[in-house]
Image 1 (cartoon, rainbow, N blue to C red):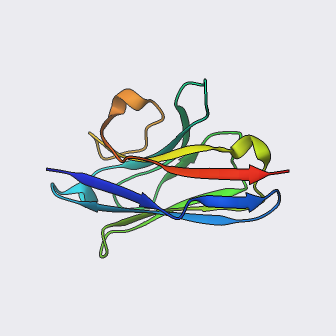
Image 2: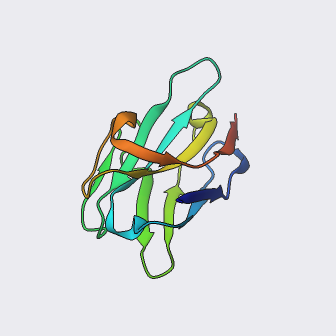
Length: 124
């Protein structure tokens, strides 16, 4: 059974930074791609960033490119999202997800496992 547990969310002022972590266990998640998605109230779940199994390849949504950095530490079974220069429009619940393949993916259908989410609120 795969488990994904996010942490690191919170309230931050615009321009600030947060670092999200995702602890994963079960199955060989370290051999699959992973990603971060977010969902604001009344909105659909939105792709944020993804990383391939080794960490060598990353892919970002245009809205976060240059501000967010996805990384992983397979020795510690951890996925990270460093978020800098945060904006009020980044406010959402952020979800960690494990893909069904080895690469980078931007569609929710490419992911088979999801965490419960962590709230990020950016005040103006």
